[in-house]
Image (tube, rainbow, N blue to C red; front, side, top):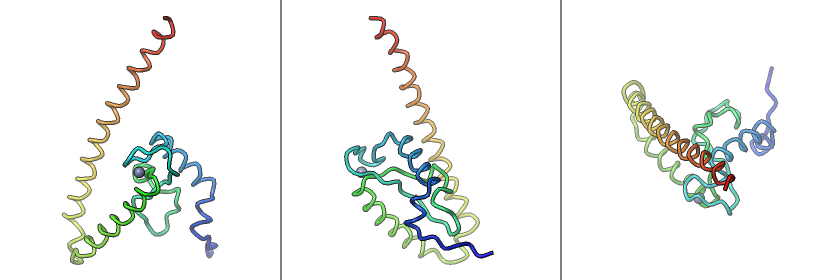
Length: 136
Ligand SMILES: [Zn+2]
């Protein structure tokens, strides 16, 4: 039951990726999450790759809208991170180290959640203003 080989560039044309890509860009307000550029062509960046996952199968929290120049910089930075991770002696990259890194990410997610809530409150406050303005 061999799976038919589909080149990566062709997978990016899949409607499932196109949908996911649009969902991420909408979430990010059609702007680069680093420099907020809305004019340059935007791309949706995968925060990591995992063998066997299709481009659209990644958690949305690991996908980011970036402009081309921030994407280039990010790609370079990821190579640096990979190189640093490559120095971890086999056997250490399990247990405590992974747990510590996971809890760092979890703390970060929780803090980001607070930011998102704060933003949602701003949006709700703006919405409450709209009818008042319409009445005037
Ligand atoms: Zn950018």
